[in-house]
Image 1 (cartoon, helix red, strand yellow):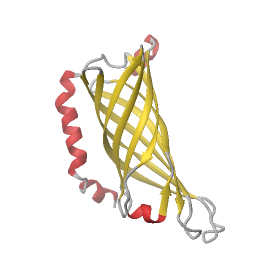
Image 2 (tube, rainbow, N blue to C red):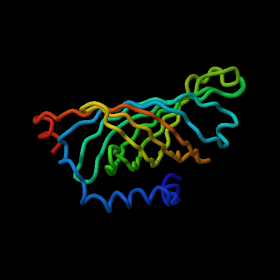
Image 3 (cartoon, one colour):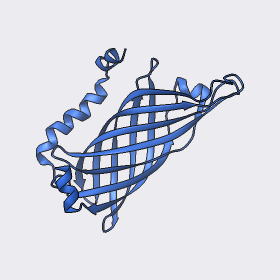
Image 4 (tube, rainbow, N blue to C red):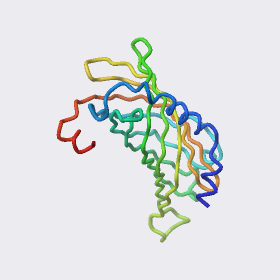
Length: 199
């Protein structure tokens, strides 16, 4: 049951949230004053039971975030595909939809970020020779994760980043996915009318 899974959360998810809570008083930008649009791409780097039967593709996605009263908050998505190792296994696409909380710490020219995220995992399985006639089969599961990112501002409001992230999907047999990604982000000043709406 979902409630049972929630009570079994690994401590590795709790530590980042505690660090975020302890840092809220040092948050920098005022809430909602900027909007950051980011794109990322990368690879699933770990190998476990899932990877014995399915080969992952490259991952790509994007996010939108803003300073918040408590750290930085954003919404985003990451998508990748898995190909069955033989014709009896259906290929499937995985989409991670998430809300993310960030803690930023400047260090020289770099901005170091601790990330925690919570979201929904959508998996859509395709028909194949074995599962013919079933149509597209979909599954939805809770996921949680954390990660670390280093970003470097390269031009005005443009920055490049590299990150490591671990995601745990709470299927009956838990799925752990590690990602190494690179990305680009652009910051924009939030229009006054949008600030009023968000507040």
